[in-house]
Length: 112
Image (cartoon, rainbow, N blue to C red; front, side):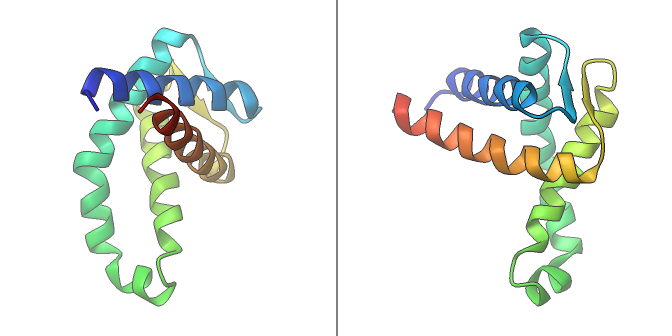
């Protein structure tokens, strides 16, 4: 799947999830495209470092700590894009990461 299509799918998932959850705010659809790109970059560069550093606790929790890492990556994106994308707290970020992953996977499956 092309990178442009993946960014489109991710931005639709971000926009839909922000509409669904009251603790998440995205200013516009254009902002959701930027959020999708920033989340992709953070997942490519920051998330592997966080996974490496937290390897012992991730092994101890049998992988459940990866949900915490996903929520932290979303909180970092919210901090970087504070005027376009806002997350109220950690729990909304955790729920946001789960729903965005599900919606992105569903849309990717439907399009492919």
